[in-house]
Image (cartoon, rainbow, N blue to C red; front, side, top):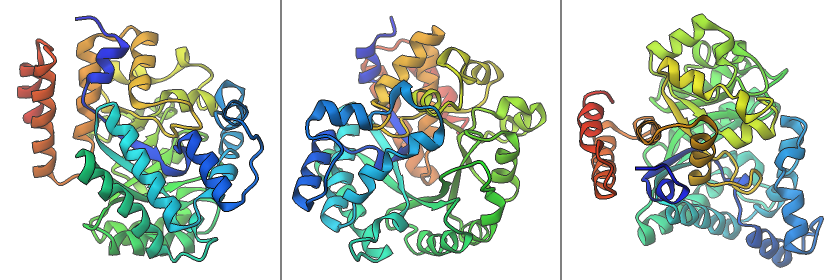
Length: 358
């Protein structure tokens, strides 16, 4: 069976590294701006797309992040947050994403007077509506911001603890990586660790293996966001592999932010050869101009991956989800049933192997 864009679209998928404020529909950007009287840098969809879909013109992570200065001001009230979270889940559902984790920082959505709890409530309302309407399962990941302050991260960590089991499934540290070490925020991570909250941290994207080391050993990360520079430290790579710590790879974004010079030079095939647990994700669907199916096709085509390898990548996403084990097992059973229904001949064997190796 050949690997094709259509087949990849039909595969059951996850999207575990997905930013709400970087994944709005372009038409929704226009609607929200018009309704709230916010001027946009372009009036037409093409002009707006050229500005917001950073693409290959981006020179750095910092430049990539500037696009958020357009989207974030649109997300300062409950109606906007509910609408965009619902639409994001709907878009993911339309391409057979069965489970998505949507991350954002509530700190960035208070200009309209919302409390932090009201921000989380508004997002959860949209995600719940999408679940009820489409069946897609989702979870929220709250993000501390490296360059704001450790105190603000601690405040968000308390929120993550309070909202555990009510929609929030994890805690993250995002933002400019260079010059803002994760260890400065370790008090926040100590709090979430001691309350059994899942942790993922952006690391090894704009800075080297030392950033990943801090995420793991100072902050207790269970997954690493990006991690493309892990290969520069063989001993640390072996530790990550031995402990089956998943990497949240976002291929298109990694090239756009210059985390890697080009897709051909991406660490992904090296990680696959070494047997690391790798997941494929979108990062920012609007700003990177992508979706989960396209990201799978990009790596399949670039690295000539087989269907078996693509299925392994898909299954790794479900195995890495921040879900209780019984829920994860049930979801995997659904995944294997869907693979078999698609006629993937070795789906049954994959099912046997994966059940015993979560």
